[in-house]
Length: 111
Image (cartoon, rainbow, N blue to C red; front, side, top):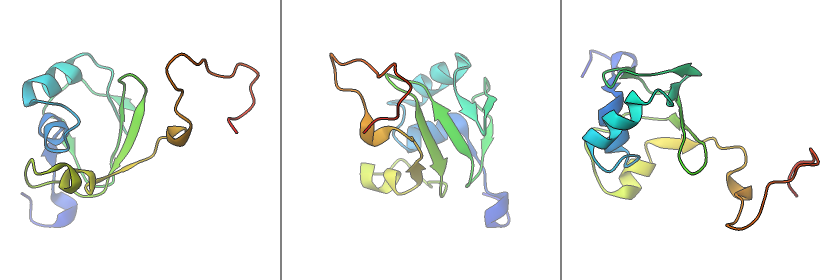
């Protein structure tokens, strides 16, 4: 990739595919084109956007997923290898709402 670790980058579409956050690279490109993905809080619409270790991605799906890139993957490997490359930052991940339930509206944090 680059000369040093700080120079290393990877295209966003390849990263999503390598990390198994998209089933195919084409699906990753389509997801990026919607403009709903954020990189370090900024909207991204380019599949070729350079991603570095330490960047934070916000990915909408059934629920918003926030991940910090710990290290850039070299390939699309098995799931455990992919999961070792990022850290989930979702604040409410342990309190995900079960199907059929609604979120609290009283403003109180979950138990």
